[in-house]
Image (tube, rainbow, N blue to C red; front, side, top):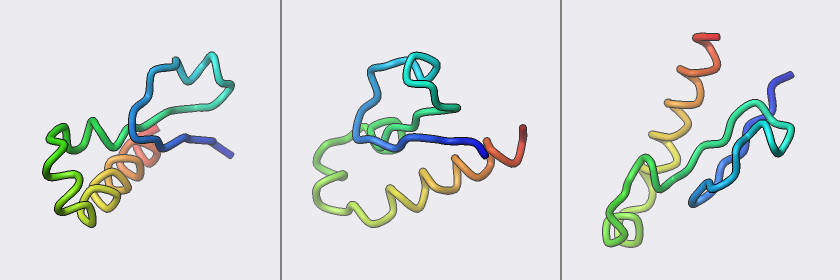
Length: 57
């Protein structure tokens, strides 16, 4: 089963961690103000990206 990590920011290569992929909330919404004032859509958008990537494998 694939293992992915989700973090605010990713600075380590997923292969180094022994996981399949790493995703950053920062990649979905780079604007700090928007991340703080309207956070709800960010994990949903990232979840969609993860699902699309995983289904495409």
